[in-house]
Image 1 (tube, rainbow, N blue to C red):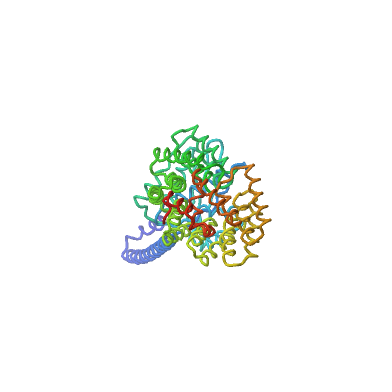
Image 2: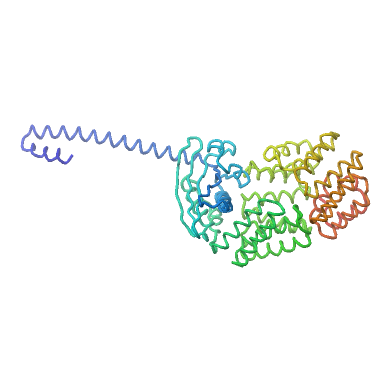
Length: 516
């Protein structure tokens, strides 16, 4: 263009030249104007298109991160980052982000981005990887629009392992900016809670949570060792105290790894320590809620703890599930269903949540409504024996004896070392007149008690099925004296109907304040 301008200047000495230059200038101006207009239209169109794409993203899911560390024992690291990203993004109120239990099902990459998005009903997927070298981690992340498979954003962070949880907050903020959602002051506060720690502390904590999610005797025992190690390294690291609290409460409650009197006070002390160190830590309030509910039998205190947990972390499925448990045991079934449906919006492929929904309906005497979620839990996880147990009881209550016995026997096959599976098989055999087989199942239970802790409550179904009310009430009273966490829940189970009007049973309800 410069050479054309210089050549044109030599023609300015004549009028004709001036005329030709004027014409050329006008033509050039028009061409430039048209070109500029076209460019602006294209740019505005692209911006508008991008903006519209971003505005469409109101939900996203985190695909389980790949681990490129070259160490097969590092699953705790990639799973931990996946969970952390789910939690951080879930703290953004304008986004719906499925929880860990739903997304972990897609680990291994057997399904495409589009399949994952469709099953989770989300607009976009976050995928990436984590790689560790010494105490340094490299985290890569990219945001993919599911409908178009278009990469909207990508980045990587290289940080010290001690900044593990700060990374997920940075990623969450970056994604929020990309999809153009506004972070509320509450969102900002939740994302700012992540605090650094020593690399060894972070590693021990992540290993603890990895084992906690296994929900097995071995897993809980390993989790405790790692949480204790984290606290030994860094005594003021609140998340490790909260993890310890959750583990002891579960170990002394549903899993019954140890007596409640031994486990729950330790869990409660750990929860109190966690809250003292960090009053914003929702997991600590969840653990405290369960301790107050199943061990202290403190209705008001339990509800306060659970509502605090939900307030601090509205997208915490753990907090919502805990509050639902409280509402069910309080007889507030409609509220419980509403809370559970909210949890299922956040974690739509969680077999545990569908199981708990079925449990709530069953305790409410709505067996017909309990069946679909129980079946859904088994569809998602064929080995989820708790859902099979609910179906077995429903079949038994409706006279479908053959299928009920088959279900109870299947539960024993699924979990042969779980005391409740043997006890409830004994109940079913006794109720259907197969007393010899009921006695055999009861003997199997006692044999199991010589190898591991068996809750006093676990004997109750067997004696109810055999029609031995005095023995059943005796074990319930013993469970009460030992503050067994199970006693607080089973008093609402429909199979306890033969004992419900017994004076000793009513006295127990009164002592526990268990009058919904």
